[in-house]
Length: 318
Image (cartoon, rainbow, N blue to C red; front, side, top):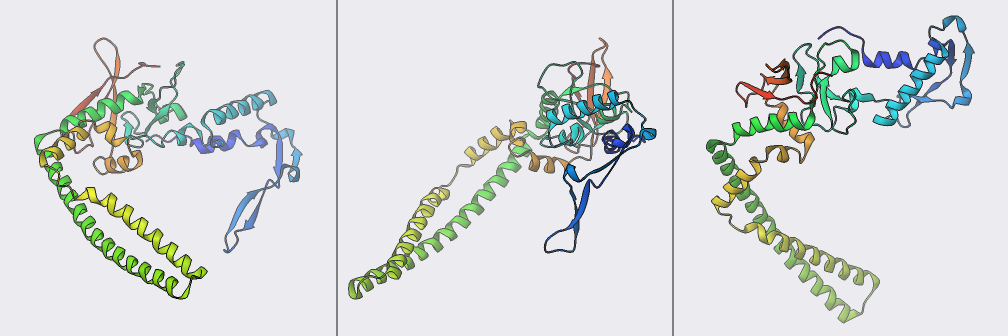
């Protein structure tokens, strides 16, 4: 990794009014958090700020300062979160976030806006290049292209008879465990149902003998609601005991594994956590074909894939 300016340090500089010749005090205060001895910083109203003009400290013109602030506001409007920025926002919610590394500088590939592109499609690019200009790797690749090609290669690896047989056996085992659990729970619910019915019968007898009271009526209503709830749960559990044919389970497993990308996209956070268990990093190597067309090659680090996987980049050198 190259030693470069940190984006957060640059952001602090761009927001510091001292570089336009102004010193501002009293913009925040520390208050004690209720119930603790911790103090937290809180902003003060702008009316309480103390501003002093110090023109000798100015290092940029007022016009340049204003243009920078307009640019910062534009980025905030596009990416939101009050200046969280492209770097931070781009890593959330993507399957390969934090796994793809630029082979030239070792930095993460992040979601970047393609230069000159009028499209909503997302592109991966080197963070050192697009955040700091500190890497010569300008190649970008569409998010959907890299996910489709990478997981197609992984899918070819896992979609084997051995893997399908193992997965089918594991799914069958878990189904049987679930059925056994439901069976035990069902027996408990039926026992409870009998108890509630007996309690309800005694309450009704008490009403018939001594007359009703608000407390007895409420007790009857409560038992009736519990009976309705137990009946619904028993009905829902009744289908869990159906024995599934092994052939049907195998077809189900094969169908789900055949759409690995769709399966992983159901819960991106959990899927990414699982992927991290099988790889430390995926190095993205920018190369050029004989026709001059640029592309990325993904290599190394993935214990489920042997060799290298060719990923054709879209958009070329920008």
